[in-house]
Length: 174
Image (cartoon, rainbow, N blue to C red; front, top):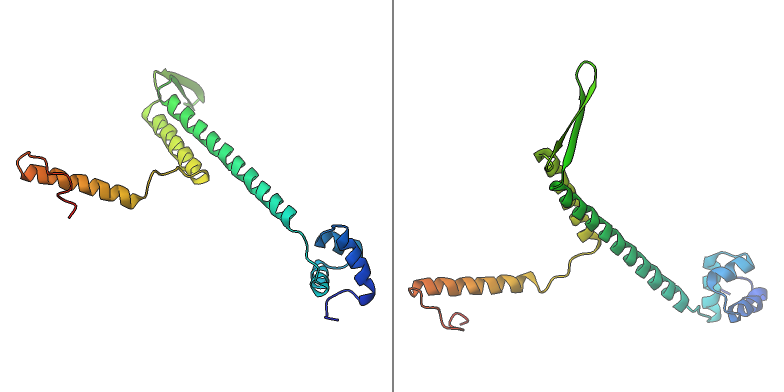
């Protein structure tokens, strides 16, 4: 008998619990043994545990987390939109000051420059964080886009060199 397994006298109990469909952790609790001993005993007896429920639970958990990230990203975008909307809205600026610590306020038609900067910065940070949670989908690879742009640029240069006559299609593909 390999070390780290239950005694031979308990193999029957182990097999019965396994036949009932209990998992490794449940068998370990029922027999008051460690999970490692349960794993080694199962291996020694040629028994395996059905991991499909664990895999399904892990996939469900992953889907839940992805949904929560998506919801958080949407909230960040809401913050960004709200911040940008407030840039052009009437804004009350106030301060306490003077020897009597008096309250003063002024209403502006739109946010002053300092406030605009804070609002735009807040919006930019919120958009950045939303993109980290749920990255934007790209239409193609950056290399393909660069090749396309360079090809169009080369055609434009060729057209200028030929005094306004457009370069024939495919002439620069060689």
